[in-house]
Length: 160
Image (cartoon, rainbow, N blue to C red; front, side, top):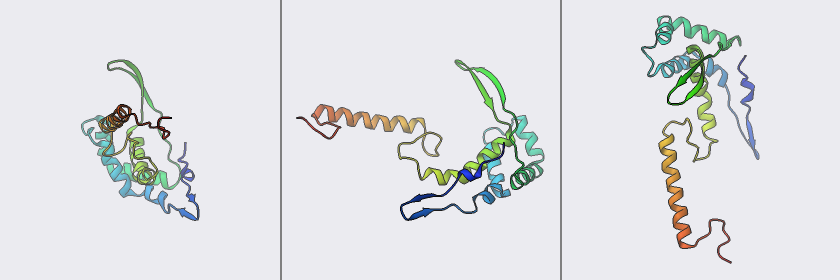
């Protein structure tokens, strides 16, 4: 399965065109792959798969760079297993080198796509998360409670 980079096409807003140039070479760059590797290994430095990848780090990153540049990169099959923590669920995990590619891709497209997200989007964003989403929800709940107590309508029509 090759990356479908053509899916990242410019969007047209009126007469303005937002363009993203040279994104694929940035994805393939050794520097981006090295940063992606550091992100992928965070909290996993003692795992065997990280140690094995790191033993030949330069070679592994250059191999990924080569495969991306030549459009021959293909992800490995997912490793599927069952965990019971606290309920039973099936987990499918990517190979470590594929997680490096995931981070490399997010390094490039994250800043592009995050500009399009609404303010109240919290999932998988730096500086946001479950706690932030709960706090924002509580703020809206207090506002609704205050509006209901005062008789104000949130639908804009007011009392008839």
